[in-house]
Image 1 (spheres, each protein chain N blue to C red):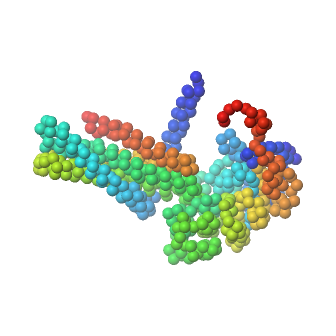
Image 2: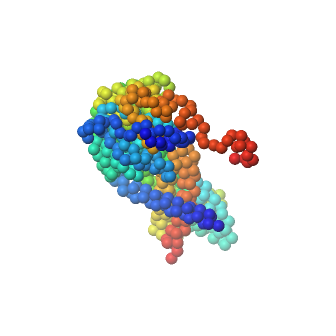
Image 3: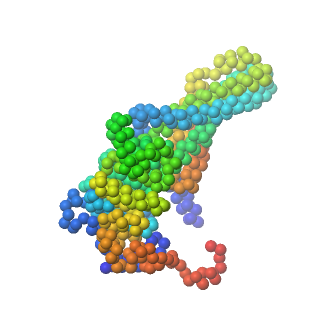
Length: 259
Length: 298
């Protein structure tokens, strides 16, 4: 009778300890922020790794999501004779929700898992311990630039996803389904607010960038230094990041658009 | 002589305790003669006691070997000396500084005077051989690129790999990777180098190269070397002093000649590599016949 309760307690304590370690790591990363100013090359390399290398998957996904949105939106709007509002629907959906959320999920899967595996393998092959023995703080030198690389890249990727998605919606809506070109753009321009919609979407991207990169780095740094341990950590990084993004999206949406 | 439980981690047995711990530095030696002084070291990993009241000295300028069966805490000892782990009790002094009590900045300052050769080499895999050796120089010294180049080439020359400067770590053999790691470890001209199982998995030629390199570097650069290994013959051939540890205690200590003459059954089994003795071949188990006749699947 007591065993399941004790097991639950143990799991809870383990989770809390992990959360504590994750926050300590974040503080350590932030304490080393000056590192990226002193060594901008380290930061640029990580913006390339996390951001530039994710451009293709983000752009292609954005294009298809925008095209699908236009197809589905056209079907619903045409029921009410409101096809000309297709541009608003596609743009608002993308910049408010789909852009930040889908981009964060894609980055968690592509760059986040790569970060976890890289840090985990560096730990397993004693590279992090080697740095410590050379009197170099591995958190400041390895983790901090990667954290800021993710932080900077995510909002830019969100903007790219939304922009390409709008183009995808335009090609399908105007090119294939015959929606009026002028109505598509003018309604979008009048109804989609820059501060309310676009900026809030980018803020979501910034928050997701922090969370996805933090989780990926922590899972790698905290992983068991074996092949199975790194594998488990990589899976955990993607799952935890995806859940955190979806949960945070609800909270942010409620705060930003919930009146 | 007291009885102590001893084992390799697989077969605990009872044998006589050989030696009280310290001995590398003379009992009346000045503190400056000892580079490392460990007193009353206790360290546990979960419920498992790794070190139980260990005293140990490392004399300056010597090559000191720490030997013992796998899983006895030899690597842990190096991590304690270098401050990667903190002891549960006791003191660890390196060059007069209490490693166990240092803050990170002071510890990093001390580590600039230490080098460590990891079992895996621990080379940074995205940097070339040249950049790996240059890494500590670029991190800690404000030197011109031309000076860094000269120093790196000299360090690589010392380990015989100047010609491999442009190779990446994944293009090196295991022995070459360890020599590059050794060049990196001596890049800042440290006072001490810690070697973690330097001979494991090496072919005879690589092993011979590493054995002579460790001795030559120690003497030429006036280093102090601590070699953790269970390769008895190779390690004993270059060591000035040997500690044999097991089950959290120092089982024997002395010069290679002293250890070779040691009559303790346990030490003889370890040094001569005998398959059975005080450390049994079989892990404690119930009678074989009874075990085979028991119903069950596990």
